[in-house]
Image (cartoon, rainbow, N blue to C red; front, side, top):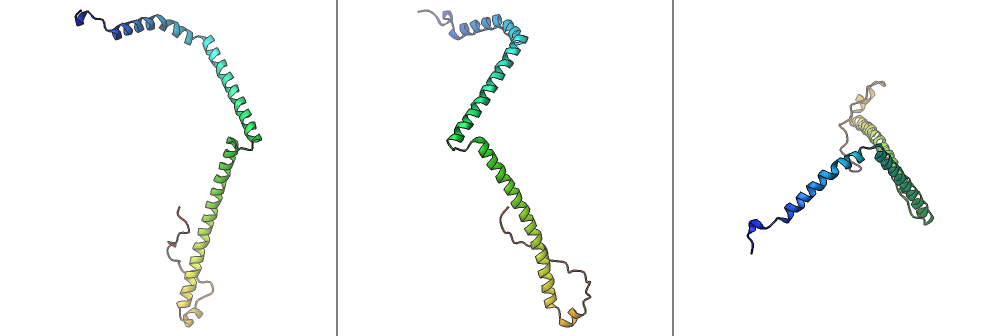
Amino acid sequence: MSSASSQTDPFAAWKQMFDQFEQAWTPTMHETLNSEAFASALGDTREQALSSQAAMREGMEKYLQSMRVPTKSDHAALAAQVVALEAKIEALDDRFDAVERKLDQILYGLTALAAAPVAAVASIPVAATPVAPPAASTKSRRSR
């Protein structure tokens, strides 16, 4: 049997073969990849792939519409409507909060008037400044 030092390492031989292959092909590959013809061919291939993808998308959308199945554009339109509705709900919620604050001010003023003696109420001038309302209500209609 032969000694361990006389045996060759298969991975070392493979690495040496790979290094030689790389050294031989690197200049050719750099020349090819940097050429105008390669860039033009790559651009043409990209354009063909994009037009093929657009045709496929258009065909699939028509097929799904004929099958009465919602398409990606249908989902996108629905999502846009949901976002618009959420914005309107928020605007209505803000307006409702403003009305609620005004009602709290009126209620506070009426409570103060009801608690005041009748003689004191009669002496209040008509153009009196409104009484400051209490702090904002801690009631919450819904969690935010």
